Amino acid sequence: ATTAPAATAASAATTPPTATAPAATVPAPTAAPAAATKMNLNTASDADLLKNIPGFGNNMLREFKEYRPYTSITQFRRELGKYVDAKQVAEYEKYVFVPIDINKADAATLQQFPGVDATEAAALIAARPFANADAFLTKVTPMVSAAELAAGRAYLAP
Image (cartoon, rainbow, N blue to C red; front, top):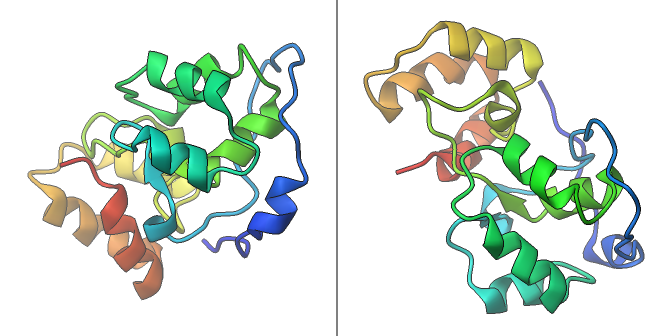
């Protein structure tokens, strides 16, 4: 599976946060920056979140932190969807990730791994349990490019 090119910070900055009623479902983000540019939702500092997410302010910072630790991207979407619409949640996902627990992550959380789509996420779930991260990476290797595999390592929970 391939990912779309990452959106530029300039284009992301033109999308102001909105305060509409949450959508029933939240679409996946439209771009996937390299893992090095995404921040771990559970460990990112206040300063990093404020500096790196365009249009992000102290009110959303409080909401991000209120629900820590996040165990799935689905949880993040549900909780933040109380405050902003699905489009804005997807915009935030361009900058943050929830660490992937290889034996517990839901399909949506597994799809944060670069190159993994819904079909591949289902196959990874069916292949559980994994003895360790190396066993997981061995299973995911034929599903993704070498660059995606290298970037995806940063998404795995310790």
